[in-house]
Length: 50
Image (tube, rainbow, N blue to C red; front, side, top):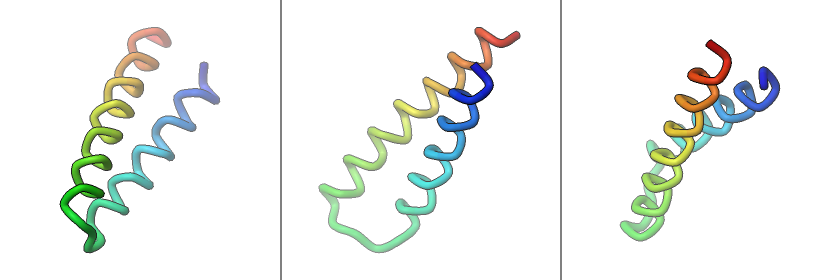
């Protein structure tokens, strides 16, 4: 669980850095969907571990 939570947070941070870079609207929309999914996954890992 700890490894999974760490991987989710690391990937979430990478997506957030990618969003800050200039890109097409379609790319930005896809990245925002990924960020939402990883945010949900991060919250799920926190709920399970607590």
